[in-house]
Length: 624
Ligand code: B12
Ligand code: SF4
Image (cartoon, rainbow, N blue to C red):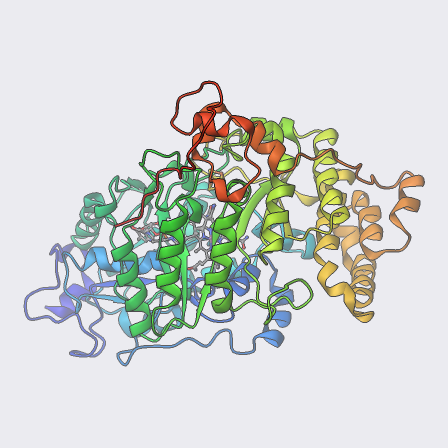
């Protein structure tokens, strides 16, 4: 029966492995598991922090030696006794949990790409791949490989292809179907890489859905699958599944969706949901039980948690709930470190006390040390990912009109600078992404962003600025728009913005005499050797500025670069004073800077300022 199953795809219509035909490699060697789950190695590794994965997504093959030198063990992963993966990206773990509602643990396995041969056998009917960024065509990933290399492929893509080749060349390939899901599946659809990678179906959406289970049933039955399928996103908190197995970097979902509605954003298309604290904590404990020492909550904006579908707009953070959640996480026995993931800038301005209290809780468990920047006794720092995207109000209005709510997008540069001031004061040094070459971007827009970056420098503020070229992401409100598509198309100003960001990023390293010098000489050498041909003439002067061949003012006088002009910036008090009256009641008195009208709006009733006011606190809600 097993031999038959191995040779005749059409004779395996069962939903499960046939009776008495164990799918476990432990029971019958080479039999294979019915469903094998995997993810590219570069997306599964669980050490050295988030940054290694981001680097793997952004650098070309020929620069792999840099990573190898810094992290010689980065390819080493840990396995369970049966050879399955000890950790996997959260997406694989949720899919696994979803499948275990219908299949037994003998029928489903999650393994690293190197171990696929151990688990794929004659009984295998589905190999399901979860991927974040398989072909490197997303923002910030493609751009750096095209700046530095002849190939446009980041390492992540190279390792993904190795994994797909392995699946494709399996001797059992004709018995199983290859399903791909996860946030990067669209890259395969958009580049029509089905044949090349040997993929039968790309599923977009969540694995909790009944459609997902139906898809697996179909695949196991050997039925032809659609090339592309959409899977529904749960609309309630209870419908979200939480894995009870270890995830890479201890990723546990905190929220889905966002609510700020940026036009280019994928996750914002999902419903805004904040997960129940009890279930987050179960997943945290499960991770620790299985040896994870690091936890990270997956979210688009950590500050909306605890304020979704309450009487208060989500952009006024629920301070008590957040501090309570993070306190419990970092105090969970076994949690040695915690990494913050994504958030937005406006909450720093809205509630600086929240930032201060979170710093008290989170800094001691942060694995990130920035000795030149941090005022923490152990030089610890928090590095959340925040989208800055543009300093041009005109452009921001087009692509992200609600990015800074409750503040008007007209005040976006001030929100960024004031938020960053509060962040830095509390030892938060965000990694901020910028998009260059947005559709319709003019030189004035690029100059406005340069003004903002120069103003950061002038004010001694620091964020790691990560510029990328605009990438129209699938299904977003901007998917049919094109901006700059290749680095050679970048204008001198756009190149200058790119290089100015990296020059700014070198600032913490400028304290040693040799650091910046080595970097700059290296940059000049690279330009001579390779980059001037690759990136064209518009790259030359921005690179000279980066390398510091002459002071920027001289380069400006020579007409080679643009030096940002000083910005008139609103401080927190001015920003609050410009808020819509109906938002005032959500401000917290202990942060200070309150506008005159605040007290009269405390009860939601606009009116004259009362003579005698009893201090009141806005309604608070702590998550159950
Ligand atoms: C945590 C995180 C990271 C972490 C850890 C990643 C990891 N390997 O675990 C770090 C910081 C390292 C990271 C890095 C990057 N990230 Co990231 N990351 C996230 C984040 C916040 C959460 C991901 C997560 O675990 N979610 C929870 C799980 C449960 O969701 P999921 O993976 O989507 O899985 C669900 C479904 O997709 C589906 N599913 C998953 N797999 C499969 C498989 C099958 C067969 C099926 C049917 C269904 C299915 O079911 C799951 C739930 O039911 C997301 C945003 C988000 N909210 O998704 C961004 C996000 C995925 N990242 C993104 C990007 C761009 C990157 C980088 C390229 C950034 C960069 N330039 O460096 C790198 C790439 C790293 C790499 N190795 O390739 C983008 C992806 C955009 C895209 N693909 O087009 C996102 C969406 C952020 C954004 N705002 O746009 N990231
Ligand atoms: S703030 Fe970030 S997550 Fe939210 S919609 Fe904008 S880009 Fe998306």
